[in-house]
Length: 151
Image (cartoon, rainbow, N blue to C red; front, side, top):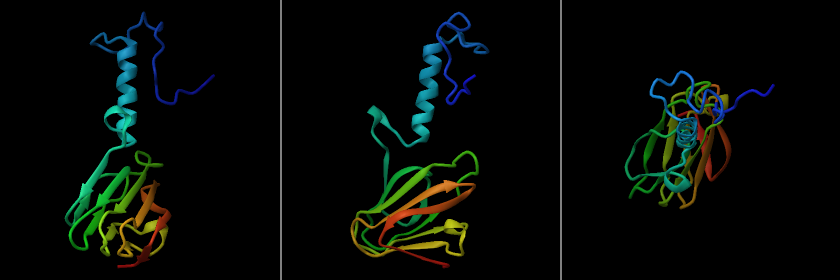
């Protein structure tokens, strides 16, 4: 027996009505809602295009997946909250510099389980920090021109 991965409903099951759905929504509409939720969680936006959020000033990065860019007129000091264990596991966040500044990204817990909480960009356009969420922490994937430090 297969284990359901995304929880789609078979069209012929429950007379084409999702069981437990008091609104009587057809299975197809229910399945579209499930897929929409899953794609949104992966950072996919309208027409299947990835969502890209641009930050122009220092502050908190709200995204836990997808791509964000840093394009301020000076070095930006960004903070990034830890991912939620289980909920965010496997999500990948790319933070790309669109301006030639030594931006910093600081996390609340250590990156990759070590003692480093801050990543400093090298100061070139295209410098990139790539992180994956695992077990409530961020782990650095291959990145471009990043220096990790304790503070």
